[in-house]
Image (tube, rainbow, N blue to C red):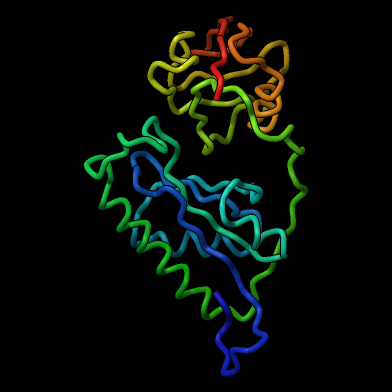
Length: 225
């Protein structure tokens, strides 16, 4: 979104707003990148008053989507997301599962944000330290679906598991909180990805979870990708 100007050449980008998987609105709409500018929270709260979405505001701006190219160049970003699901990248992700009203409401929120941003004379940028580098492409598959909207717990909260996948076969369920994998303490999604990178296909590994405030030790056998 460029500022209003009569000269289109050389104008700077005020902010980048992204929509990435917003078709499954149920309990909340997660907005990542709120920490990329001190102005986001107030703008979002005002814009949402007539819309009434249940918003989950996340400060983290280092997210695996199209916002990366903008945020790393000093542009404030905002990315809307309704969460991963078991149909992700699958033929089972059919139109009947879409919440059309949720999409319409998300569009209304973004429309109001853009109209307000267009009138802003200044909109600051706040940088963030990058996450730890991963070990590269993962060679194993666990079939877990992380809940990227979690805010108050150390570990990786799951929004679900892929049916018939390693996690499902291991007895892991939606709302389980993963706190350890093959002896490695898990406090964030970055810890989890790093731990998965060490696992070997078809070789059983230990996994520790919290389910309804009870710690459980399970075994999981990673599949090959």
